[in-house]
Image (cartoon, rainbow, N blue to C red; front, side, top):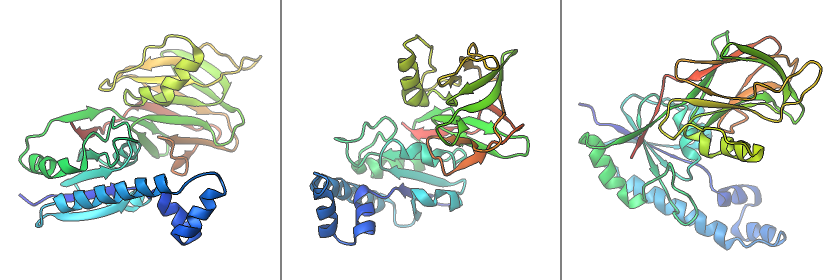
Length: 296
């Protein structure tokens, strides 16, 4: 059996961004001081991330292959079936990674438990040695998470771990027709969010709380999806009756664009990685075939 390749994924820290913009630590400190901020906690968070990365890299057995990938380079990185992915960072890094994988195990490493919730990045850096050994020995337990896919008729598709957004790229109203469970309705709204069980604790939860109405959300390990229409506007041409629903694993939601320009579909809040959604195009939203395999 070939030795696995460990792919360590990270994202630039706020400190990295400050140094790229201002050149030196002193200049960055001066810039933040002018905004009544101290650079000390920013540098401390950067140091914890660097220490976590160093710990994880040292934990990789010497004979194993390895790669280090920045989050912004994931779309250009070619993954392999035998990869073991180690995401070092905040919980949001896991959805960024998941969309590019197809069954490879993912270890979430939390570099700073005092700042990150650790819902998906559940392990401290020191655990990396044992976790990699357990994966090699096939003695780990996986927490499999459902994902959502939006597909267009021309073959383009997008996958997300938390949620898909379908709407207009600006703050103007999105116009479309939604079809679900035998019902069809024309909408003018702030867009549609379709969440998985993982995403039900994020954006979808906020929408449900804002409505003040009880909506049954899928649990973290559930294969159901939840769609929510944001701020639907009633008029002589648009309705507001079909604004939420639970999509079972064998069901689908159809959204037909009525936007000449600006219609988009993106996943997990990553707006640059979006599908254009112009007039007459139909997006089919359903449970994705691929799943996140998170090391529990």
